[in-house]
Image 1 (cartoon, one colour):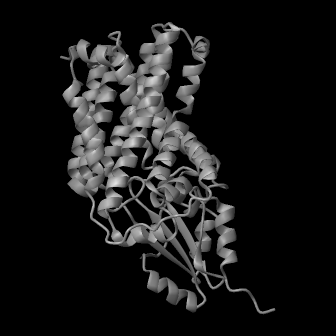
Image 2 (tube, one colour):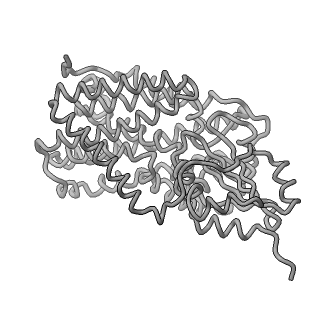
Image 3 (cartoon, helix red, strand yellow):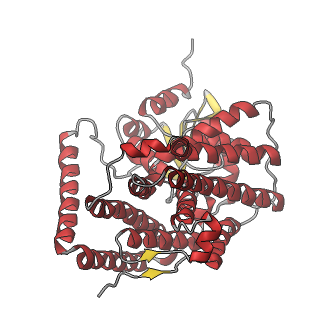
Length: 446
């Protein structure tokens, strides 16, 4: 039997542990002997603009989508709150985002001084960090479902909000959490800003990371400046209990995704067992608190959505005629082999990805394994190479750095007309990939 009870889940000591785990997760990877070369700072002002835009775009990337449910839920609960509290809570979320980016910058600075491996999202190569994130998202899911309430101690809440407002620190942590989930995503413009920051001076690096944080926090700063916009949101009511279930399912999907990332470390069987136990626990809790009809409705919605996807997919086969099964002959990344293939007049298509990179999966399923790219890569004159950055790899990290990238995905096309390689955008487009494959080929004799 489930009992809804208030739990002092986050006290001051546990909050410090949260920050410590976040910081130390960057130091679990192997070291690299060569330092990162300095990058000229003549374009620092343009980089600041790129960083602001890259941070803003992070809000709509797939990695951050599970947090949107929590954000929407917090906005709905604020519609009847006074202006001061609205400003305070949105500023708290923005502060959490900024604070997280400063932690990232500090970790990168220490790693750079000690010669450690540096990259965007490398903490997802650490199973302890993935496990910590899965536990955190699981707690948020159970909290949204009402299985328990997270309440801070009155003393600590007063210290943070100065009025005993228990939601202020929660919004701060929510901002930090959004940043954590954003790190495996390489949004447009983000790669350019991060590449500059990781190779620039300490002051410029801190400036760029601050601008990235400000860019990601812009939506919350906007509501903090114009809190009256909350009045246009629907008024709180019984319907919000149903909306919380929808938001919790979004967070549950994030938890299951994080658990799937643990399978290379703990095995598929144990991962499946943990995922099933977690799912059963949540469904039982929903049935006890919200009624069995709610569970039936959730299962019906899942079946309906799955059926809709299959029907829509069958109706759009002329656009998605290529199966998502990967039958390409992928060779492991080998820069010496790339040079040899170019000498033979061949085209080399290099794809660097990681299991935890959602953008990588989007590129592969939506572009690489679809027409017209898929048949183009199957030609005998095209060699496909793949680098897996799921686990720490000095070779792949050095390859990323050679193309001024410090995160995945990275797609590079080589050929007689481009022996140094032609790096493609972070988000792939079929037309651009085909154009690159045609461009790098040896030009015909005039």
